[in-house]
Image 1 (cartoon, rainbow, N blue to C red):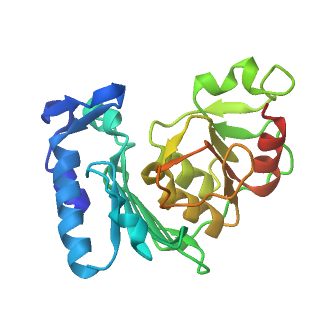
Image 2: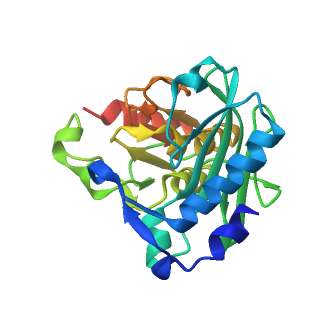
Length: 244
């Protein structure tokens, strides 16, 4: 349903606004999907809290045992450009732990899903994270600024092959699928960008941690994480060890 709402708009012609503090664009499609999910999910689970990129945050969610963590359209810039790499990202957290997750790319017909302890799937088929044994020559999803020398202990990025996708949720899902060995983002990252993909990766047999190697916890008072490193175990640990 969210996909039908989003694709009823044309990205390049959808009405758009720029958020304050250089927080990026938002379109009428983002808001329409957010309204749909807010109405549908809160009606089904009125006792759940709510954290969404397109809803004003309040402290009420901190007092709930479970909550939805939503990014109505992750990759809004891609949506605006008419690309097909934007995604809906929906997760449920319970006491700081993600227990259910979906990342859906309507224009690529890709539905990633996971439930805690039940594995991860793509369009209903099981997926598994990479088992690459070393960081060298691994394929890593990362932005160009991540490669700057000051981020690495050896004053140079390790010898891996860098690729990029604009949606963080899609990056995490691609790593869970085994298409890439790992992903890394060093910027403080909003929970709604990460929550669903993090569970999909761990249920696919990988790991997802912050840039220091700490466990990811959700529904924080400040809903931002200290970067994210995720992927197959050896590659992910190699990245964290190599970071300054």
